[in-house]
Each structure stands twice: as C-alpha cells, then as structure tokens.
Amino acid sequence: MPPESSAAVAYDLEILADHFQILFEDCHRDWDDIDLDTLYGEDARERHLGVVEGTLCIFIARWFGPAHLKVVIRRDPPGDDISVWDNVVEANLDVPSGCLVAYGPETRDRCQRLSLHPGQYRARVCAGGIATVDRYMRSGLDHYQVVLWPAPVTDPAVLRLGPAHVRW
Image (cartoon, rainbow, N blue to C red; front, side, top):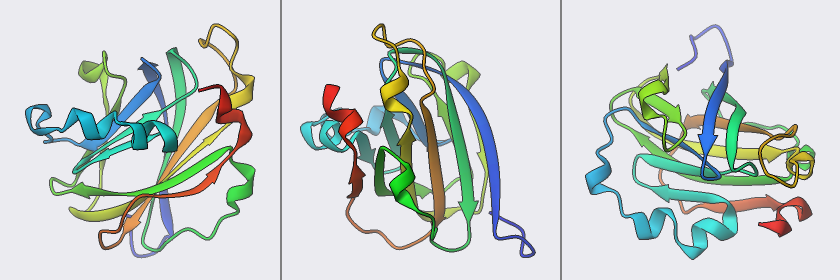
C-alpha cells in the first residue's frame, strides 16, 4: 500500500507470458481451490479477464513472450482517462496475505512479488497496443496495467472494450 505521503506506488514488470495470459493473484492462493470453469469461462473470455476469489487471469494479445505489466497501488479509485486504452475491465481481488504475484502460467517459479496491505481491492485492468501484436502473436507494443485500491466487493464491469480485441 502506498505510504501516507504519496498517492500511489507503481511497479513496472516484465512477465514471461504464455497461453495468452498473465496470472495475478494472492501469493498464498491454492490452485486446487480455483474454479477453472469460472476463470476461463465464456464471460471471462468476453471481457478478457478471468476472475475467481484471489486470482485474476489477464487475457493478453500475445501467445508467448515478454509482456509489459505496470501495477499501480493507490489509496483511492483512479480518475484517469480510460479512452487511451483498448480494453478496461474492473473486478475485485482478495489479497489476505498482503502479497501478490504476477506470472505466466508456465513460469510461476519466476514470478514477480509485490507487497501491499492485506484486504479486499478493486482492480482496474487495462490493455493497450493490442493491434500492434504481429500475426504470429509473439511480439508487438502491447502493454498492460493493473490499478488496485481498497474497495468493497462488487461484480466485474467492462468499462471499455475496444475494436482491437475483435480478433480474439
């Protein structure tokens, strides 16, 4: 969580993504308890974000390769202009351990760890540069951002679904 003197803390991560996804979850999440039908279901594919308690599956434009993910932890909801993004979705993320990990499905052993106050957060997941990904889906200028702030539980919401995602 950001110190009292700042509005936000930001982390720039490079994640070795694969299978069109980046997983973002509580460090102590047990995959045996995850409902995969919900995480990868039709609703998840339509909004490009799978959501189960303690886990977000960010569906990205590239099949495999390094993906840029910026994570911003705030005290308050963001007030930024979402029109600069191709896709913007919000969902809740429970972080009881106070530790988050971000990784590609095959690279959990090389995950990035982030610390924050334990609790319930709203996550705004943004995707940009989707149309720049090459036809082999391995390179491009695609980039992703997750903004977190403390918030009560509410349903996932699609705020912007741009035309670049039609090819999914």
